[in-house]
Image (cartoon, rainbow, N blue to C red; front, side, top):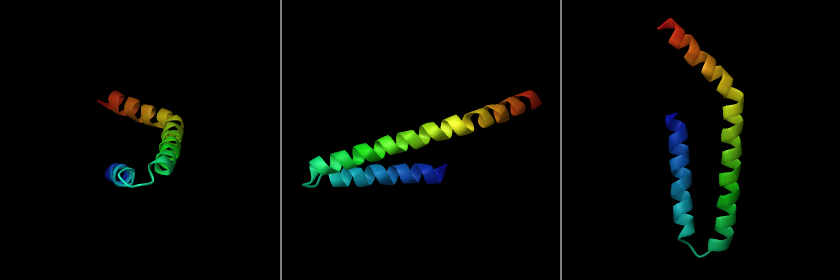
Length: 64
C-alpha cells in the first residue's frame, strides 16, 4: 500500500512540475489520459478483488 501511495505522490509531483512548464496544452492532454487510465485500472481492481476482500472481511468478522 505504501508503494502505491508513493507512486501516486510521484505522479502528482511530476504533473505539478510539468504543468508549470511551457508545454501546458500537450501536458494537460497527456495527464488527462494518464488519469483516465489510472481510473480504469482502479475500477478493474475493485471489480476483480472486491468480492474476495468482502469475503475476507466477512470471515474475520465471523471469527470475532
